[in-house]
Length: 423
Ligand SMILES: *Cc1c(COP(=O)(O)O)cnc(C)c1O
Image 1 (tube, protein in one colour):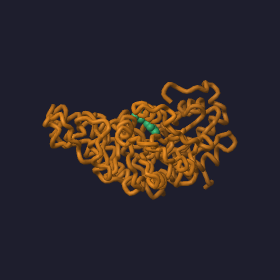
Image 2 (spheres, helix red, strand yellow; image 1 turned 120 degrees about the vertical axis):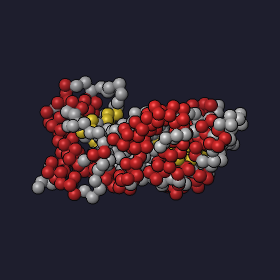
Image 3 (spheres, rainbow, N blue to C red; image 1 turned 180 degrees about the vertical axis):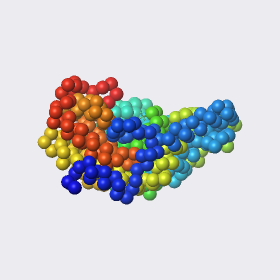
Image 4 (cartoon, helix red, strand yellow; image 1 turned 135 degrees about the vertical axis):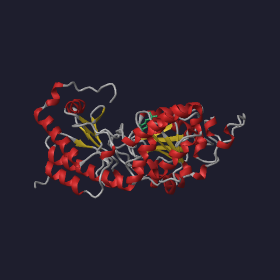
């Protein structure tokens, strides 16, 4: 057998120690889907639990809040408990609520307490725009201008140097918000080390886990992270617009939510309808309004799959797939000007790989024409996520075989090199 061929890829699928759960998902015949880091695919379990909650609306009407297998009143907590092992938290520390951005607002409103000369927020210049917008608006609410947002610079435009971040943790910083995995390069930040460094300097620190949750292992509780927040529609496969989640370390239980609302109440007291807010004693306190039950329902099934596979196995299989991707780039695309911008070391690489090419936009269009779904990031990035849950080594090989053919035949040249409206 040659070292890299379709036969070789198939043999990896047969022998790899951790099998996928591909049969639990809806996979379109003939399509290679490598965009699970933007929108995970639908599983049959997610479909079932969504139908189950539609059924409880049908059957119980208002009483669905307290009746049925998944009573809506307790759904956010139930999902928090299911999510906790995936992020290394105690079940009381996680709640499924809001969206990434609204949860970030809630957590900054709660934990950003400028005092004396400690008034600044530390973030980074590679972060996702929504996080930066939220941080700037939170500063504005406190009467500070943008100069209070420090964004650690990247030396190469792809990767952050943890020593640069630590060097920026001065005594003017009140709060730090960083990604767990960078959405472009896929770099993992060492959350434990950064948390330790922040705490040594008396600074609160929180992480955006959108690109790390469901693909890498976290130990949020043991790392002593103050807070975290994430979406559930990427690696977690909760469906388009599925409800987000947040983590608050138990040592902060009792801190009054910056943005209070009645669903943050102690559940026993919520319906006394008092004008004095009595928050829940756990992460549930940070909920605001009525949960989006139908946007949470698919998660019941989707998270089950994670807990069956175990997040450590998800991570191991994900690395094996992305190792193979990197091998394919090297073996098959050597002559075509692709630059690998993701870190190669395991402890630094998240769930996707990131390539750059001057013709990236139209290469992605050519891939889509051939039924391969990549993820384009302007101006010249291609993200490819071989997801542990449902992608195979064979798909990786085939994707690169197609990509090589597109480069060889210049099939991409018939497309314009511009991004689509959603890309
Ligand atoms: C996907 C993503 C978001 C999206 O935020 P929403 O509120 O869910 O729209 C925010 N931050 C990062 C880092 C992301 O990857």
